Structure formats: structure tokens, C-alpha cells
Image (cartoon, rainbow, N blue to C red):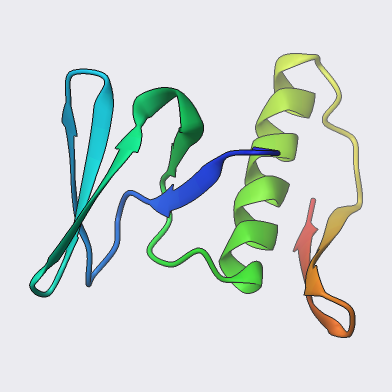
Length: 93
């Protein structure tokens, strides 16, 4: 995710489509085009720190399960947007 433009694939206010080597994003009357290699589409509605923390916890849980590591009491992930602006997501089990 580092050094990529994070886009919410399930956005309720953006229209996102892929055109060849580009990702095209439409918001109201504006349209933006980005190189596909610079974009990461995430299965979330908004790229808020709250949703990013929950997404990352889910991804970590799936990876741990795939490695056979399932006996965890909880996963807790914090995402900081800037100093003092963070979200912490805790997922039991």
C-alpha cells in the first residue's frame, strides 16, 4: 500500500473504472486519470483511517489463517493519518 494512491473500490461517491493502463476516477463533474501501477483499489467504501485499520486487520487475519496461525485472542491495528489523528481497530479472535 505504501507509495500508492489508495482508492475505495466500494465508494458511494466515486465512480472508478479501469481503462487499459489507467484508472479513471469520476467525482461529480470532475474526472481524474491515474497510472494503474500507482493505484491500489481496496474493497472499502472510504479511505478513512477507521476503514483502513479494519481492512488491514481483516487482511492480517486471513494471512495468519492461511499460515495455520489461528489461535489468537485478538488483533489490534492502529493507523495514523497524521500526528494525533489515528484510528485503532480491534478484532476479537
